[in-house]
Amino acid sequence: MSVRGNIDKLRESVPADVKIVAVSKFHSNDEILEAYNDSQRIFGESRVQELNAKQPMLPWDIEWHFIGNLQRNKVKFIAPFIHLIHSLDSERLMLEIEKQAVACNRKIPCLLQLHVADEETKSGFLPDECRRFLAKGKWRDCTHVQLAGVMGMATYTDDLKKVRGEFRLIKSLFGEFKSHYFSDDDHFKEISMGMSGDYPIAIEEGATIIRVGTLIFGER
Ligand SMILES: *Cc1c(COP(=O)(O)O)cnc(C)c1O
Image (cartoon, rainbow, N blue to C red):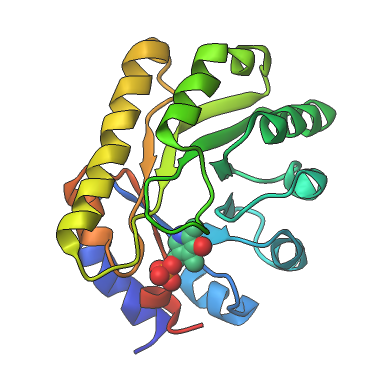
């Protein structure tokens, strides 16, 4: 099926208030334009170099989301235009984002990436690390970093009960942080979870943003 057909089909199964990030990593500008021409405006990339090669060649009104592990020395390359960073997972990274956001005179929305899956490799704050990060309060000084919610990934497994449990944990941590720190802050509202293999469960468990690559663009 075509990119257009894939997106149309995906939209049919996603409630209108859930945002779809079309994850375009390893896919070409032509494929991205095919989705763009079907009204897709939010695209996600996980590598700074690839994003920086694509961004100037593509329409200005694309909202680029950064979804991968972000090295501090590369923040400056995306700070001028990035719409949402899904992968804030340390104080040092936050301080660098703050610095680069100040330099371009913008406020950069970021999600707290939570590590709830079994896999060693997945980055993100462990729940207690994130609690400590928020309790410490340094984020309050970073007036150019807009904390906008949480992001997480479930374990890659056929055990759907486990996947559901992990999404539930992400949602419950969101609720905890919201009530402790952000009850007066309307910007803290997003729960980014769910990919091609598990997005229906993520939506059932409260995702406000899903990140879908393979189902839209095919295998990488
Ligand atoms: C690649 C990637 C996705 C999309 O994965 P698919 O299985 O292709 O839908 C979502 N989130 C992150 C963080 C990714 O790196």
